[in-house]
Length: 263
Image 1: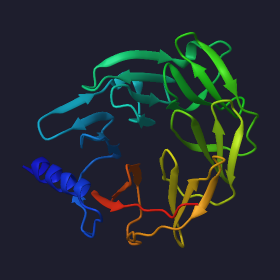
Image 2 (image 1 turned 120 degrees about the horizontal axis):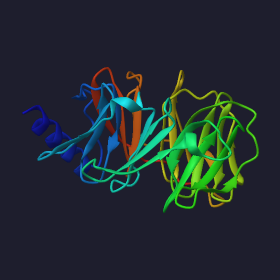
Image 3 (image 1 turned 90 degrees about the vertical axis):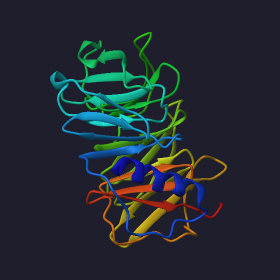
């Protein structure tokens, strides 16, 4: 019954021009990863990944792989689940059936992968901790296509789409394109989590929300938010999709409409 109620509320959120409710929706989980175009919810509890819809529930787990480090649902037909401790990446289909498994321990030369994201057809964004750099990796042919120069600050998280990778560091956010060239740099004390959806990026600071979007040269520039977001909730997880910002905080999921001024 709670899932029917939850999906009814979420479906209504998609059809409204602006969300005014600040009560949130109950959702008990360890980590919330996002919602796709079909209002499927992705989250994990006790290292079990769940995909829930009104009609179906799917799950994936492998206790031998350890803790889930990250889940990338940018392509709902090829979901990426990364297990940092065992250096293993698993691709899942839309029913959370395993398609492919990659063990980074077998890479030559050997290196430790700190973060992994999808980068389009048969490619991955990888953060090589040993070299302190981002690598665009072809996992079919097992080769690095491009790599960035070493970063001077530790990477604490990554956000990406198929064309750009945003590395969140201790001193700000550095953006690279698929040619491994730096296109943008935000010098800001960034608090995790960070939300990103193609041309928009945002995060919450001690003084409120900060929002950026790409200009014509694909540089992230600070811009203003024209729709209000509650300042009361401290986000544990953020997901930005199609102009909707999902904030997971204290076992509740909040939804706000995001409208940014054009640059």
